Length: 208
Image 1 (tube, rainbow, N blue to C red):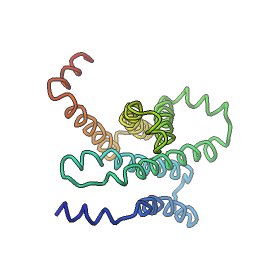
Image 2: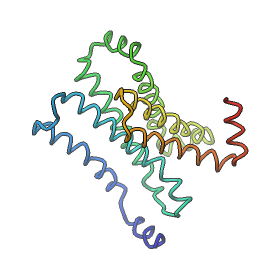
Image 3: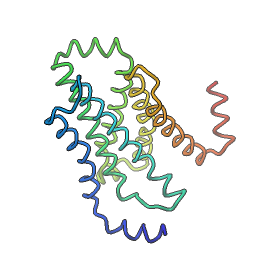
């Protein structure tokens, strides 16, 4: 079954993933034009862009575990998923700067200092920016082994993004908690594969 699916996936063009990535943005634009964004449109725009970014980030993180656990090979699409994620992160930030802050840079700085969850978001953005800028063959050849080390930042970036989302809501909602828990589980599986049970729990004991 998986082999047949993998053969079919080899015929799916990467641009189809990009096309799929445009669907949430198209729906958001449509809702904005139709006035379906609720009592606080700016907040809805920011939150929907941010949520979509996290969903695509989670999809990017899931590609390798899926291959190892089920042999389902989506590796051809991982770069596109990651870049789509960053595109939504950038749109999320631009929406905050333009619609919420109206380019008031001094007010932005005060907000970042006053609201720690914004710091988490900015750190996640900086990490994802570095990954997006180096997601090309030239960077892979130029950086060598350092490229893999740099792209491990996707895990702390995902954790920061998940905490940013949960903290921004100011309430402990089940869905953001589920997403953050899934990100932590994927990180745990990666550490488990690399170091084994003894290595992972040894690291936890040293951290404690």
